[in-house]
Image (cartoon, rainbow, N blue to C red; front, side, top):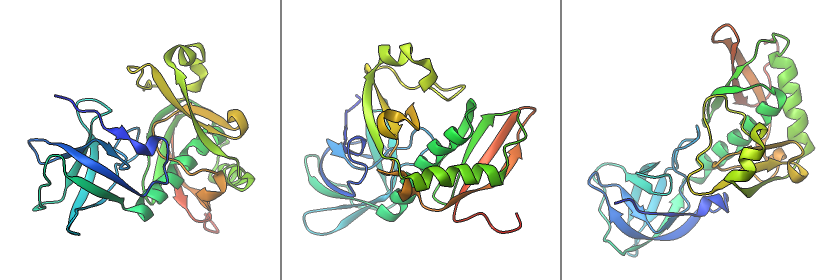
Length: 248
């Protein structure tokens, strides 16, 4: 049986603390709640870690958050030898906020990189210290220096980052919204979540279920640490926090 968890992070990525009630414990000890602010691994972004607080003040440490039989079933995986909560028990959910916020900044940076390099995406992964995007990019004129400069222009412009829901039909009528060459966004539930950067998506607009900052300046100082050739026309761009080291 698949359960449906209300994903609070889809409407408020800054909800570091929330409440949820236990609806099930799966056969591997995973905790399923009626609602959660914990993001589940998806779309290249790792799931959240953190802890649940019980009524007596004790904690259940959460090592990972993943999806179950469907994208709407969210499973919280405790670290080993944790107490098992009761069905119906109400918990206070505490996301590891410093880690999540770094991932939010990185995920938004990845969207900006897809603007700086407007080519089909063949792979991507969001990380706490480094993220990567693979592009089908034959043009060698894209360098660490000029791409970093373009990224920081968009960061400093401080464009708003918002989300909006569209129908499957609207997405089908606008195929250019999908930047990934190989992966289509899930279209099973009739609605697609768009992440828009800039007024009415003037900077970027693409389907994404991940968590993002609310304005581009929150991304902070970022740079392209490395560009790797991964095939005849495939380039891997690695994004890192901080400024581009001198002499690189």
